[in-house]
Length: 364
Picture: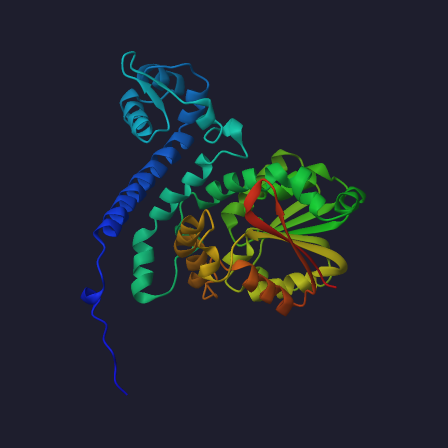
């Protein structure tokens, strides 16, 4: 058998295609830099300040935001050349157009896209550790990610919390009535517990339990429950691959949590056993295809694969897990759900949330 060696230099070279690619790369670098600036604008409240002001100078904006003018001015100039903020050179004033404020301010939630910009610096903080994994394998554990739970809680506050009562609960016919009468609910991978605390407040006759591996997240969830004086919710640090509960819950939820698990197959099997025979499991997870060719037209695919490589996949591998990653996709999800024993599975989407699938799952 002979081996054919392909000489890359033998490939035809199209100068116009090369130039277009280089231009695209420059756009990528500019967009990456702007992502950092957008994250800063969100965290400092500058977008909220700008939205409430008429055209103003950098000094006026800094004073209103209670920030240092020199930093504010440099940030504003990045926003101007990035075509996010407009600038009047004669008056030396800056303004955030209302059309831009509609996607960059806290009052615009759930459409505030500045929240997602925070993932870029969070992920950049573990770049050296990820490169080490490229060479030597393994993964980066949750404990190495600064602010991740804080950012994730703000993210879910927009995608889940804001839609919970009006959009997510109605996906399951009759669920709200059952919650009003009183049922047992479990949230696996509850994070900071914002969704579960909201449910506990809405449905005082039902009893809610939240499990998560993160002690930090559980402490935050518990503190919020105590602050809100909720007596029908409890949170516990729990490795759900070791969950031993049998038919204890009428409704089980996972919000963007299964693909992060070290062993999602074991977790789904344990959820199956913990669910009562007439119960419902609601799994919200990323809308994607398992095969990369199925994601070519996905509007956020590059972002999601990057999040996967630098967070979701690596935290699973750090625990010796499967490393499915963010883009595990519908096909793999259905395979694991069926292997766990579930036979009735519907996949739904919400009109305002193209990023997520909502699996309505029963034992059958």
